[in-house]
Amino acid sequence: MAKRIFSFFYILFLPYCVFAESLFPVKLEGKWGYINRDGKIVVNPDFDAALNFSEEMGAVKKGNKWGFVDKKGRILGELNYDAVLPFSEGLAAVKIGKKWGFINKKGKLVIEPQFEMASGFFDGLAAVKAGKKWGYIDKKGRITIKPNFTYAFDFSEGLARVIMGGRVGYIDKNGKNVIPPKFEGGGNFSEGLAWVLFDGKFGYIDKNGKIVINFQFDDAWSFSEGLAAVEVSNKCGYIDRNGNFVIPLSFDGCGRFSYGYAWVIIDEKFGYIDRTGKIVLEPKFDSADDFSEGVALVGIDGKYGYINYRFEFIWQPSK
Image (cartoon, rainbow, N blue to C red; front, side):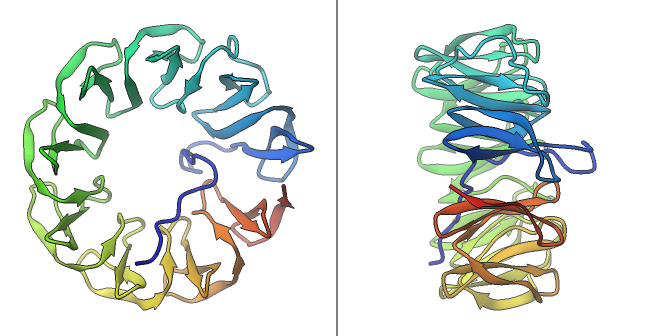
């Protein structure tokens, strides 16, 4: 089975059409800072770690403490958190000691640390772990869906994936079981469909729980730009919303389409294809990410750099 490839950084970007400019973390002489899409350093490398910008704020670390900076490198409040998650819908989850709470973009603690674990806000709700179970809170910290779940995921397109009794199902924002927990696995809804695992095979359902693409794949990923990567017999390709193959099973690994391109693996090397399946950048990297805001992170020989949508380096690979 081809590997599910995870980003070297925690990627959480907003669409390019929303923000005219975003920043990207880079490491220079052992310290982290940020560059813009032109490859210019705009936040000096003063930090021990840095994550991608989200909602115009970037998570940074000095010593053992985390905090946030804006696009001018100004620190939001102080770097005094034990862990953080990216901003989402105006709030960010922060860990103080052993508990999680939430701050706003002024650095004010608006939901007191009280949860064992937390996620970001999506569709106005955030998944939190209270005691041994997961539930959901609103932006005032009020529990809106009681902690009844073994695990709860972010809301997406009005539904959230939850695990109960070892099975995956989907609830709405009122906590109603819209799709009962009967699947062995499942993904978030994207473009109206979600991949699910049943009896060892992957297929797709709609928001009513109707099977729209039969269980036939060895692995499957979410739809993006009208196409979804699927795997059969250790090879992956892409299908459309009707389950028809648009790009044949010919790759060792596949990414999500973004800005018209997707990374693929051929003989353990990463390159990029377009929506017709044509190779537009020959596989030569050891790792690669989806394009986000017109930029993609790539790795080669233990070094990491950024390319733009014209496949030009804006930041040469470096350690």
